[in-house]
Image 1: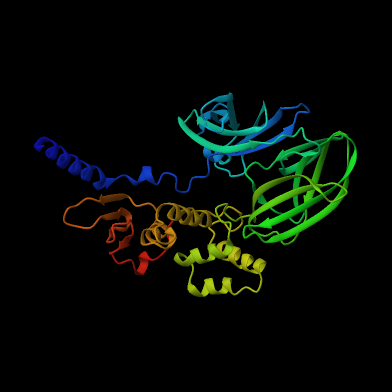
Image 2: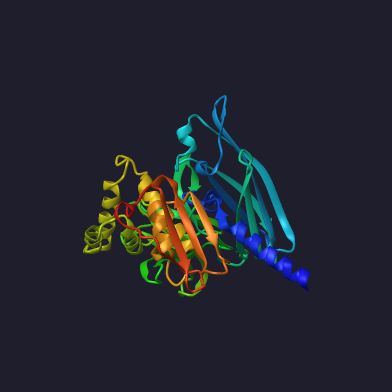
Length: 427
């Protein structure tokens, strides 16, 4: 019994020593880094019973990869593995692995948000529920990125049937043949031309169908509905449609496409989620109202009031963007480093410091958003004579900030004054 007690005491104090100091470079490593890769999974008919073509598009941005100097410029190599398993993750149905190589001419292209590589792999599987795991391995940095998703493959042999919806990045025509580029991220910049989509209708005979396009906002409000009657061919009919509506602003949306027969009976439907944003707005922002509230650590109350007093939603967004344009270090470009960094910190604070309220409102969130990643963290979660506390050190400011969890529920409150010049956002 005595030996067990000694062991437990040693274990506790060893744990205290391990937690006492922490290198923030590892735990904050994801701050400011983009999502590693994007994926879109779409089902199309093969024309055969009990078989559906599953198209898996993968997009890997250059900013996610490690490049090395090469003879032709800069080179990156990575591999992709896509595993299709049953919904219980117990049995592997199909798996494909391949290698990709990216070569760019100059260093600027390695850090550009506009450069990426897209790959497509198809699987032919029966309708059903599946679990899809996709892994990207960066061979230069020896790092791995993972996406996992449950996916239902629909039976497209029924009559009539409709494929999944592909949001288009662009569409071109070469010698009468349509060439399409999918928008894989689902992050859409809506232009005045509208939202272009592609899908297919499968029918055993030529007929007329009523098609409803319904656009719904994140709060379940219906913002757009458009109905047409269309002739579809026997077999496969490819449809390119542009959703045009000026009320599509920034935020999350759902597009429903419903097929109805000439008696207005629903005979097929499909749904697609996407995020609408404006050029120059960080992808992390999907709600302007919330983003304006989160500006309290960089904008003055008067500036925030000016944005909030806008008479319309579009005017509010314009004032919001004008503020960030004014403080941009590169106002001639849409790439605003301060804008991006600020909301990356807000997002990290929300993910890691939320307790009774959102993380950006917490004391840790405030210090993190204002000053960034600390140079050193001391953690004291098990000290016998005190409440749990942390000390964040910023060497360049010659400042330390202490946070105490008085409740024991992870609600750390700042006990070191934060005022004067320290209450200013720093990159």
